[in-house]
Amino acid sequence: MLEKLQNIAHGRGYWLTLAVVGFAFIAVALYYQYVLETLPCVLCIQVRLWIICMILVAVFALAVKHAWARRTSHVLIVLIAAGLIERSYLLLGTERGFVFRDCGFDLGLPSWLALDAWLPFLFRVEASCGYTPELFAGITMAQALMAFSSLLLVISLALAIASFMRRGH
Image 1 (tube, one colour):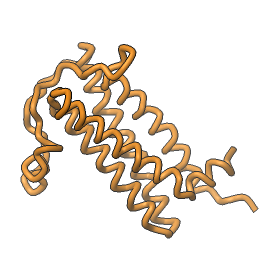
Image 2 (cartoon, rainbow, N blue to C red):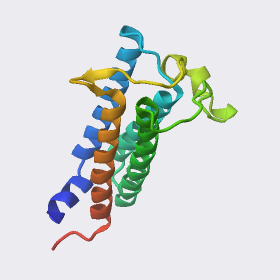
Image 3 (spheres, helix red, strand yellow):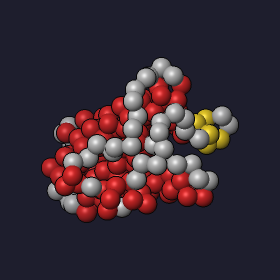
Image 4 (cartoon, helix red, strand yellow):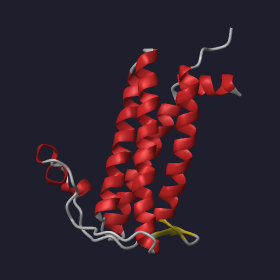
């Protein structure tokens, strides 16, 4: 089992999968926003930011060949997964009513990183928090994000640990 995890951790397939999944998530979000006219809230946009970070780290890991750079990428994906869980939990909690918070239109980024002004089609907050659309079979986007984020954390943590372990003889 450890050897399989190490092979995945040191291979390119994992990183390619993360990049493809990330692009798919962004495509689905934009489809819901522009085709189905489900406007994004601040938490939704913050989830997009974490997904974009995941894509960037995956592309970086695909481009480098050094073990230290891949290990760093594994650690970054663990941190990204933790960030996604935190935002997904807030989104789900707001939707289900077990988290109460003020959800305004300020993305919370510093002025020198005005992504909402530079790329408004992707990062502009257009609605207040409250619900997420149903994807299929009664599963909402918040529920799906929570499940994905949790799974990503477990997988990325296992692969990060495996990437630091010495490979068998």
